[in-house]
Structures are given as C-alpha cells and as structure tokens.
Length: 390
Ligand code: NAD
Ligand code: MG
Image (cartoon, rainbow, N blue to C red; front, top):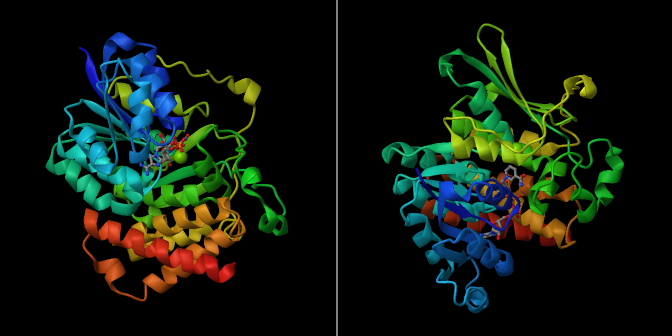
C-alpha cells in the first residue's frame, strides 16, 4: 500500500534524514507536501526528486525563487503561514513535524484535526501546548508518535507494558559541547564552540541547546506531556557515550534500557514503520568494542536549565509556552553576540519570575491564541532582559 506522506521542515536536519529513509524506497510513498524555510534550492530539489504535490516555503518573499526553481515541474508552490496550514490539512497518512521552534505547533495541530498520524520531532509543540496537542489527537482519533530519540526510546520500552507499572522514566543527556569545560570558561563560550556536539549531528539551534541543556529541559517537559507522568517520576542522567537513549523503571525494580547508535534515522524510521519494525540503515553496535557505558548525575550549577524546567512543570498552564519563547529569544541573543552563553539561563529565569507574578500564567486556558500571546509576551520580556544586560 502506498502511503501518503508530508514532511514539515523538510530542509532541516530531521527533514533530510526523513527524506533519506523515504528515498530508499520511493515506490512505497506518495509525497504530498514538503515545506522549508530559506533554503528553497534544497526544497525545490527534494520536491522534484520525490515528486511532491506541493512545496511550501515559510517565507513569502521567497515564493518567486521557489516558483522559478520548480518551473515546468508541475509541482505546486506556496508560501507563508496560511500555506503551511493548508498543506497540513491535505489528506495524508503520516506527517513528519520537523519545523524547529514554536512555529511547528500550528501545522501539527492542523494535521491531527484531519486525523493524520503525527510523527513529532518538534518537541516545542509538547512544551508549549502539550495538553491541547494530546487532546486534539484523542478527539480526532489521531496518533502522535515521538521522534525525539529519548522519547522514541521510552515509547519502545513501553511496548506491551501498562503505564500503571511505570515508576520512573530516565532520559539520558550527552552533556553537550561543554560537559567537561571548567565552569568559569562557560561565560566566554562562543556560538561556534557551542555548536559542536560530541556525538550527534543535529541542527545548529538544538546543538547549542544541548550545550546549555535547554534541550534536555524541553525534553523533561516533553516527557511529562507525552507520557502523562508526574515530574518527580522523570530523571535526567548524563551518559557521555549517547548510546542508551532512555530507560523506563518499573514497579518491580526492573529497568528497560533502549540502546542504539546516535543516528536520528532510527527514531524517525521507528515512527515511519510503526507499529512494525523494518530494517534501517543505521550502524550496528559492537558492544565488546564499546566496553563501558558510564553515567553521572547532572550538575545543576553547570546546567541551570534543568532546574528551570522543573519550575515550569510545577507552574503548568502557559509556563511552557513562556519558557520556550524566552529560551528561543535568549538563544537568538546568544547567536547574535548580544549575551553570553551563561546569560541565556539568567534571561529565561528573569522572564519566568516576571511572568509568574501573574497568576494567569498557571491558570490560563491553553489555546492556539493564548499560546501565541504568551509566546509574544515572553519574547518581549526576554528582549528587555537581554538589552538590560547589553
Ligand atoms: P533544523 O534547524 O535543521 O531545521 C528546521 C526546519 O524548520 C528547516 O526546514 C527550516 O527551514 C524550518 N523552519 C525554521 N523556522 C521555520 C518557521 N518559522 N516556519 C516554518 N518552517 C521553519 O532543525 P532540526 O535539528 O531538524 O530540528 C527540527 C525539530 O526536531 C526541532 O524541534 C528539534 O528540537 C527536533 N529534534 C531534532 C533532532 C536532531 O537530531 N536534529 C533530534 C531530536 C529532536
Ligand atoms: Mg532528544
């Protein structure tokens, strides 16, 4: 049976890995929509190669360029937010949600409303609006499949298990680029230094978020929202080898660990073929050669983002949307050279402190509108906190 597939964020790291898997077996898939941002050359090339129905760029000013690149191909072109939603509403069996940041939420929700299975790499969707996303899926009988490696690992460890038997979920963290740096050196770390990951090859933003552990802090919240466990049931352990992606601890004391190479095509492929397993082109581990798996507790002085995530889970409501937006804005500030690496967490903490003075943060209803408003407000507050430091 040919499956209808769309890829949102097709030009990014996850998107390209998804295309790599799909292009190995082109007859099995019909490509409905491919979307991207500024890289319209890549988007057009992939749309031609996979014979997509439509290619959408998020940037309206780039529509003429996309049109030119696809002239004569018979492939539709479109641009902008409304076009992304229209593409997400097109009938499909499976959609990869791999836009980076809060912009990934609306297209994913739209796909779920049409009953489409959502392979979710965009963790920000769960962080900003987890309850709404999961309720939308339930209401429309649609499946959300985790693609983040840790969450895919937990999902796989839970096959055949009852959630009632789950005591704890342990997600691993490599520690990122600065795991072994002296603490006082962190202050002077540059965006380029933060952009090199010891084990994984990912997009630039998520790689910097790995160095600060903001990525892991988003994943803590993602775990709570996706699996419906309490915050105190979720642990982070530093595992420099990045070979165990997550573990589930059960009420009988057993721990099921998911072991695999650090290659996102595993988690993407699991979601693509779920509930089956199919052969995937990932490296097979030689455990005797690897020899040891090591673990250590995460240092909350080095990585204050982890503490902030626990505060956010405690507040609930729109705190996740505020946290993510402040984090995204602080990251922009760091990349632009406006603030130091260590100031990102300070900025986010400032924003949370200011916004949580309003009880509405925890009690507000989560809708696309309230999430957007909070996103906007938190970015504004973060910009103020950044300029106060400049
Ligand atoms: P990336 O930066 O490589 O790619 C992002 C994609 O989103 C690109 O196609 C870009 O054009 C598009 N995009 C950016 N801003 C947009 C906007 N405002 N509107 C529409 N499209 C936009 O990112 P990535 O590393 O592939 O990550 C994608 C998502 O997957 C993120 O949520 C990330 O946290 C998550 N994730 C990534 C990895 C990884 O290995 N890269 C692992 C786990 C989870
Ligand atoms: Mg991850």
